Length: 315
Length: 299
Figure (cartoon, chains in turn purple, yellow):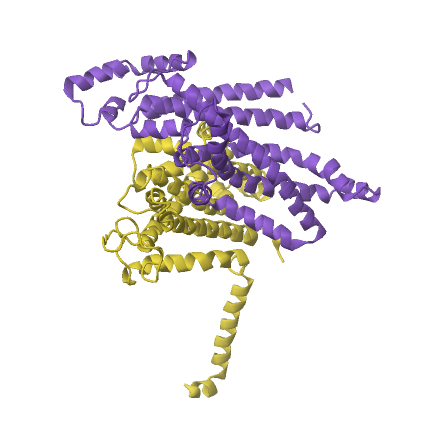
């Protein structure tokens, strides 16, 4: 287990170095350079040259790269272009909201998807095709609904028509009520597609286990169906579920960018879109790295968890 | 005409038989005679017809404004209603579908070709080539796909070509990985060894054995990738980072309608239904291909 963890950790480090390098050099590919793109038509000649100096764009590439890596290591990420706030403060205030949305979505999705998928599998196993087909068909449609469209429809129904949730307004950590009310819809929207993916996966996993010999043996011993389901089927279905949660975490992060834009939530996604629109490339590159690191770390954690959960894997 | 029936019975019989053979072939075609494929075509063909015939239909041009007909709800004249500037949402949606299909098909084609090329090289030769390709693949796959596309758009700018490039670059690593794993499975097969013993060249092995045998699963992936690309393009355009107005795309139509959700629900919701239909049909298509090629699902 330790050897495996270390190997994965090494991979994590290599990927991190790769991500930082890729982002740094990709940002040098901007037509013209970051300073010219940032300034647009407002600066020219000497002023533009001064901005270049200020941003360090006139240093040798290797020096720039080192400055960039060092700033990431000591978390001194400079200030934003438009509001002149420290970038690290900006991320520190936005990240908890995005993380809260992501974690709440995963919990909600698991709570809905596992009973649903198990039910579908159970029905399919018993030969009741209709309910199973209904659940799997619905899961596919929900999975393919563009999340920004679902979000808008939810906004239309639950905020604008029914007035249950506010469509905009401040989010403050001192007032949990505002957090719940403002984040409820985005979490609901995001969990829909996660439920669809997870429910399908649970169905496949449970269905497979239900036709195993040891399940037949348990039945032959006179166990009730529910006991069979809980003692054998769900336990064995846990592994693929862990994998899917890890794999769909990338989708979830994509989704947070979109729902933050629609529900005007001040998360990392909103900061990113604002950064791109104001051509603040130094902010954008830091955020790209932030998202990638989060994603890579979750994948690392799922890999380890998977190994830890499966007693059959020998080291 | 009736004369020929009497004078040439043999020929008539031959024609009849050949026709039956064609019908039998069709009936045996596991791709076309598949409920999923038929479902996909039932959605895609009418949509494609509408898109191509749009200039001939009695519809307002996609960019034409009409200040006398602003924010009209759906009616016979304007099936999807009109927007703030009196533009017809239906004809704008058809124009948007054109963009969606262009994006979906180009991304799928790009990803398929690049994935096949790099995946085959990595899997077949192994060693240093494999290592190098897979390290790069891992780095690209460290980014959530939409985020990578957003980052690339930030570098390349907005518009149709950058959008296609950005989505394709975000998708290619997945194809490389799939192709590589397929090649690794094929590499040790007996028929490859057989070809080697008769001194088939590496190039011959790859083009005549490896690529044809890995094409089927790659096509399934390409079909899913097309659906996915359509959704990502819509998301990018929705965020204002894809196809820019006034050129319509389904994503930026929804973006424009967002401000008027309360007064005019149709501007955003109906183009969304169109995206959903297209995405579902491409998924049906991939199921159709999969079922046709999977020997285990033979009836």
